[in-house]
Image (cartoon, rainbow, N blue to C red; front, side, top):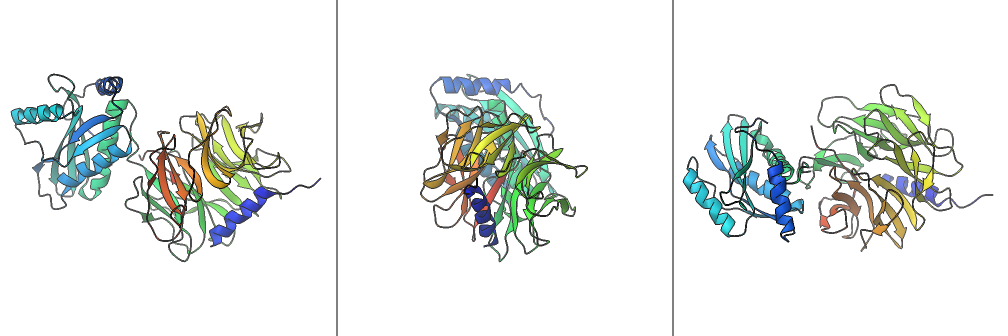
Length: 444
């Protein structure tokens, strides 16, 4: 008996749209910072208040204004985390004046700050050296929580700030932040559809492909050194791999007849799960990255597509219309023990949370919106609610944020939100249509 194939129609629509460092002082245990954070939260505060003055310039000529720019970016990073309330832009701590520093710390504490970040900057030729000192302002003596030094090229001031912010998050929560990450995406700003990458906050977009073709579905490898993606650069939808931070040629990963798409890296980086139609029907396969060998995981008359790995590597979620409409299913990494997770709407684009507890997906129940369901199939909940359509979510490596595409403002742009759907914010304002965001792991 034949039945309508709405998922096949969706796949056709997708393709049609496509066509259109070193410690300076002994480092106290970060658990001291965690204790401060927990104590502040236990006291009823929703966020930790941290003061970040301009950095103290110790050496060199600051022609780029890094002593001001680095703390500004760090402050924005901490604000984005939704864990901190930041007071910034105040004058720097004086150099080599402990008494004056102590006085400033007391003033910050009196104004309600729970912590302070003292940054020291030295510019030596093409290198920028920054030391961060974290203080606990909830203690009577404003004790030092941590001190760490970072060094990068002076032209990498933004990344230096991101690294400092991630260390601050680590010291206060026990888990590094996500500021030193990238987001890859597809853009139709030119006549073609090319891939780009930008900082997690939307800054510094960089073009990754220039083949004047259609490039889709970027997916970061677990080591954040490469991206798998589908491209028509040779006339057919083949799967490729590019290295955005290295001078290496693009590699062909899969070039079977039909579609080679929706790549998803295994957590150990050895395999890519993908959709192939080489045998006539879209099915999910495993590709051994080292050897190129493939192994079929699904075998069903319905369409099986869009795999996503659990962080343990033991399970794969995917989309199938085997029950009549496109729904989220889960199977073992070997293809066995298939079970259905969702039962309502028309669902696509599943993405497993890095924490392993939830799967985000796009559901059409009226408009297209982002939903999340627990990994056991319970508690399906809606994260976005128009206007327009909201699609193609991708998790940040901490599992607390998501990036997604939305046309709520007219054209497709990228937005971010917390995992509960709150604090939705516009990330891009670029020309053309920006789609298929992929949030990288933390950079090496």
